[in-house]
Amino acid sequence: MGYVSAVPVPQPRAARPGGAAPSGARRSLAAALLLGALGATVVLLSAGQIWAEGTASVGGGTVPVEADGGAVTGVPTALAIVGLAALVAVFAVRRAGRTLVAALLALSGAGAALAAVLGASDSTALNAEAARISGNTAAVVGGLSHTAWPYVTAAGALLILAAGLFALRFGKSWPAMGGRYERTGAPRAARRPAAVDPDRPEDLWKALDRGEDPTHG
Image (cartoon, rainbow, N blue to C red):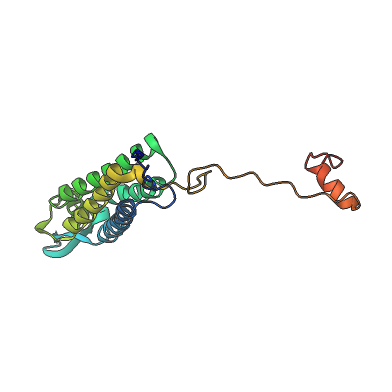
């Protein structure tokens, strides 16, 4: 009776995700885009709202004064614009460049949130408005109060920060724009030159323009 040796059959390896991005990368990419765009929108809109209110003494009476977020501090608006630019740029760069841009995105959100929180208790802009209305440079606003808009701005900035953290954590697996390779990662095959008909002069001229020898092959 013969013996049959057991030869291990090689198992096919799982296909590497070269074409389409893994589902986890797609989800993190969608989350970063949503958080960044939503956060920047919230910051830009809420920065234009009234942040502080009060009264100024004018001619023996009082008049209401108010200051919007842009008058209190322009930092959140500026950093929100920087964050939007970084959110777009993160897909145009790769490797170390993507990490740097993602860090810029996160820092933009953190800086905008900090500036908004500090602006929530600032009275400089309101005092300046009271001095302008009263004509007295030493005027100080009375009945000072702040709205919730600075904190709404800070919440939007935290969304930008979250988008930057997503980019730092998962950005290496995201696709980049303008890739020179196919989805499989292999270089695109060179196009074969068109066949030249020796009986057609226009084909001969086109071949010469391409740098080909129309008499070859």
